[in-house]
Image (cartoon, rainbow, N blue to C red; front, side):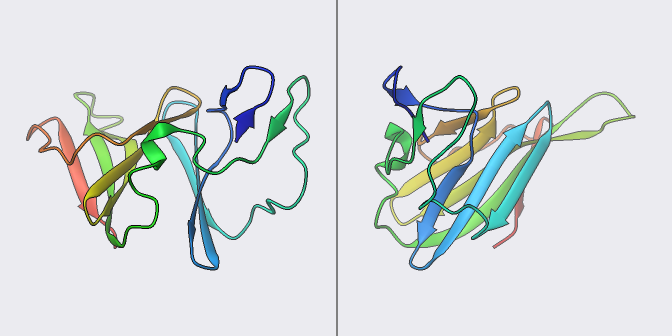
Length: 133
């Protein structure tokens, strides 16, 4: 999503990745909530967000550029391991690994964050990477 007035990517809406005729929509909110849906957002409809002028725009964030047109090879969930027993793990990101590129859609405290940083080895004991596809 694109903030027309600010001329920047809008982090409060869903991140939508198109794979042929299938869209995957990822949205983070609050501290550790994440919604992942398939083909639920109709991007042909105008956006109606009170107080904001928003529009659909492809490649609205620079982290998306490197992944565009590349073959998806893996999807992971990344969790942060917490010291508290009442919440031992917190969802941090959904990671998409493409041929030659990585895209992580992470929780940026009640909005989405994107990074295209190269694949990293997470410190054992603090992070857990779970393969889901």
